[in-house]
Length: 169
Image 1 (cartoon, one colour):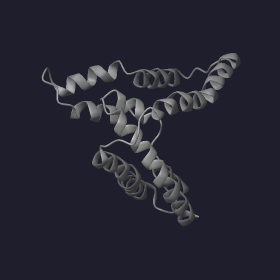
Image 2 (cartoon, rainbow, N blue to C red):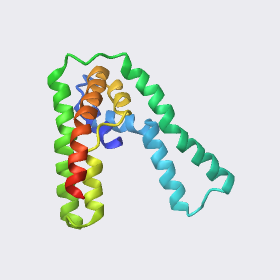
Image 3 (cartoon, one colour):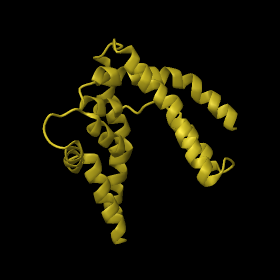
């Protein structure tokens, strides 16, 4: 997500300032990036959470998907299928065809096709867009396209994922 956010920020046309410095500033304030950096810094110390702290983090992590489904799902309901058909088609096609192709080639070159990690990664790449994609799109004023792309990738993913799973097994 931070990489995609950076690409989106670099692609925006802004009259003021350098696009690269604008992207760096935005990423330095992004809660996802800050959380990742804090987590990596904590891991680098070699410390571990006490049992009670681990239980709190585990509870929050197990509740997060349900809260996200409720909040973002409600947000998607406010959009009808966007009239931006070409944009929705481009995002859906990129996610369900180009993304798995790039992941497959990358993992095949590093691990070989017979490695379960490569196969699992390709299967995961075929999964529909995450609901958090709407949040990313909202930052760039294309919520309708994002919501429509989630719906379309889920519909097509319901067909594609079982086919890929059957092929891999």
